[in-house]
Length: 350
Image (cartoon, rainbow, N blue to C red; front, side):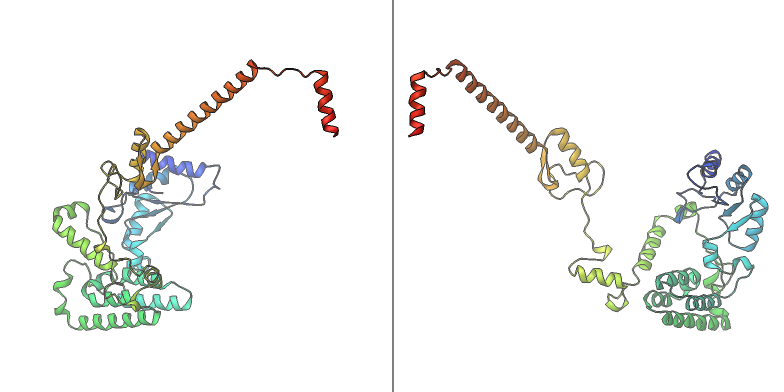
């Protein structure tokens, strides 16, 4: 459950518990953020909302949010009165969080890779994503290892990258003078497991738009690491299939064509639309004005004219039928005489 205002949060929790459709839940986890608090707007989770839910329900409640160290776990339980605490990002950056220690990143990586080998199968993309989280601060220093990690295609290659990272970190430990200036913003050296704290939205705004554009550029580089050299052997199987099915398609996001916007809603407009609108807006306008748009396949005017012509044809047909009936009624058939009947029967016998 993600929190809104106090009353709405408690109301949602009570509705879940008392719902006749769902079975009575055994526990409730409250994430003290709204659905809009994500990415750069994550901010701080509200433990006050979690505390209010804990007082309002009579089932166990777990808290989630603002858990970076073991001390945060203990403080959260004391302040909110919950029965348990969960952690997502904090645990990804430091898997030993609930043990109250901060081991070297390569130690956790080696242990994690052993678990992956012990319990197959595990998707390589999942393993790579976990290592990116675990080595977040270290990969800021060693950018070449980030690129290697993005391109590896098996567990053994991941283990080799882990060994390289371990050797480099141990060399830096032996020569502390080379890295003192690079770690001034971190509470611990970059090779120590520690939480990643996003900058606050106000701090991002104060830094100006220039830094924001640089951050977006870096994020774009992170996403396109697999495509950086364009070689087929460093692409995933899905991307290779897409490129083989569409050999002439441009997959580079920076080179994709820019579409003109609809004059009403801002969505991409039809290239040949007679109203310079998107399909949805064009359909509304064409229906209202009873017009056609061949580009979007809309033929309201044509269909209306066809319908009108059919109605006129039906009316003309009814008029013709009525005139025939009137003519028949005006000149009724003369009944045949006995002599005429006798002559007809004789002709039939012959």
